[in-house]
Length: 178
Image (cartoon, rainbow, N blue to C red; front, top):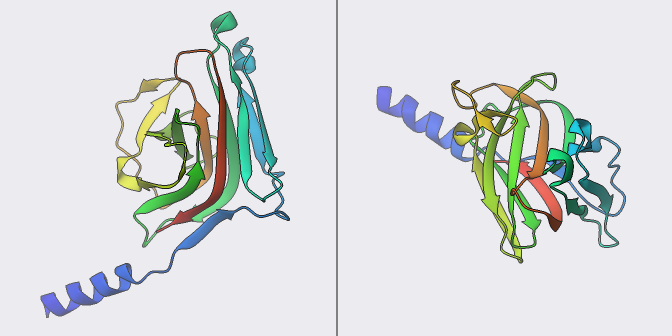
């Protein structure tokens, strides 16, 4: 009986359809996406977020190290997104060969985020982020807390902070839970 129940659970979880968190197209509303740069701390970095003519989300700009700066981010307040039955976030994107962070907040008001880093290839790619691997961080410092284990999240973000002055460009096609 134990094996039958385990088999049923495995079947149900393996056939769970993907959940769309955000799918970009030419007509999508991106008002809930907002830029947060290091200017909040006196820096001079500048990022923008817009739709491309092809309907992709475009996060681009320049990171500056002046005035103790060094980051640019785009954040999406998604409302409560339940993650039960899902194990990872999958993002279809095209970067510029640079390293970025993907971030989640269980509660949009939390001071910390759960993060992971990924490097873009310069080509379209799918970045797969296991939820259990997202580690808590605040202002670039890892926190002595458990990894992401919440039943939901309310905010996701992309951040660039490679400790160097650089221009950047990240195109985002879709973000899914799988």
